[in-house]
Image (cartoon, rainbow, N blue to C red; front, side):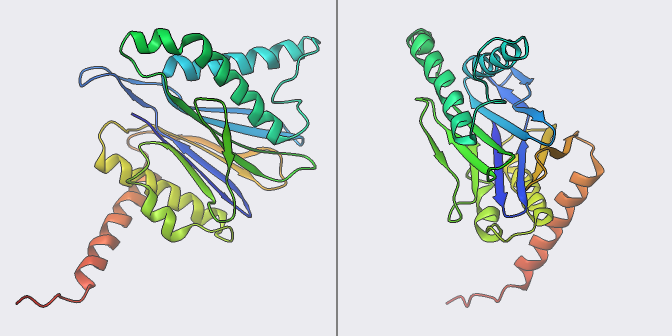
Length: 246
């Protein structure tokens, strides 16, 4: 299981992912689900993955192969050279669609699920900060002011805090706290989502990742957020008015 989320506000984008994969009760592994590409001062892109690991790793390989080919001087379009972030989302969708067309029947014939989804966020010089959710078929949607966050994987437990707190004017620091609480809520309710966590923050008009770190199980910052949130929730619960009983 997986949980990844991206929060887009006026000040930038916060992206957070867990690293746990699960293929049964006794088959739990760690795999990175966050991938970062940068050309400092020109563009920054972060990609989050969920679903069939073979499919999502195949997408990443195709994207990086194009980047490497371009670096060698080949006439290849890549997510680091395309004209817009919308085109970058198209390139990710095209890679996803090609792998689904090639492998879906074989994957499903073996009894596995071929579905996968990807979040892509970033900004290029001269363009706006953008955030996309790309589906298995290769089609995608874009986050808007009405829906300023996107989630993939086990999203239901972490959605309420985002619904209550996040809007385009939310400060980036508060968006980061909301993302960490959203992940903490998910991990408490679903043991198949787990640490370590990967974080990336892109600040608007900086064209680079200004914060990138991993939260390990014993991370004091994450632990402090989790404990404080639990304490305040309990206090808020006990402060609620009593409901009269007949």
